[in-house]
Length: 291
Image (cartoon, rainbow, N blue to C red; front, side, top):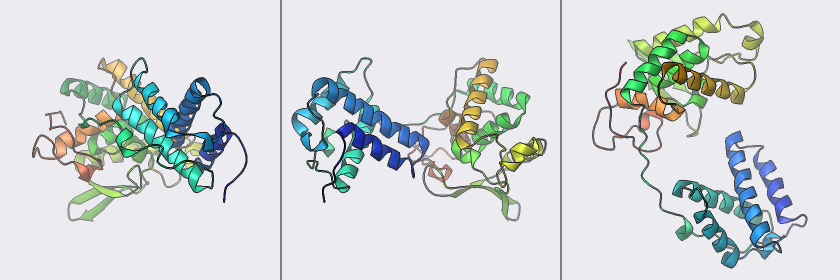
């Protein structure tokens, strides 16, 4: 049954607010960005389009595809594909909710080809400088980043580690239990002596945290003042500050964690499979890094 009410802009904004009830903050931000970009294009090029039922593949969607290709500076294929994927999801959801929308507005052949993504760790010299600076800093954020580097887990997964995440799974065998995260599945990461020392240091520093932080962090390895997002921003700032002090090029978190893949997984081919560490795709060949 067709639902009534609202302009196209109002319908999209209402649906994004609904998505915010179940999706991650960053995911919702991406959907909101897609909606605003598409609506901004329509308001400029086709101001008469006020309802989803008025949308046509030609000229509205095809015109938007061309508009994305003409941006300056240009958008990479991955960004353009993300815009198409996000808008297709929003339109499909509106149609599923009973709004009149023409089918097949965005087709498979509309998506630009994606380059093969080969994640790479930091250059060895930058990695050593950053590692040494994090060890010198030796506070909770620095040790959390060292744990990310040593295990290959994501920053978000590190934030959600349980207090008892380090567990003995056999004689002289330890593993770090990584909770549900970006891949929507938990996993075990082997923990050598170095990883166990980092966890032990985090526990020692955690015991010194103010009671108010510990009260907000019951059952979690990393104490926090606010929520998940606030601690995520704290770790990003700590990484940027450590890189600046160390004099190395500004790293991003995914390159920091790729050290673990380059160190722990054998080099099998030019595209070694590092999925046991939680990678969606194969990674770049291993590079010799400091421990």
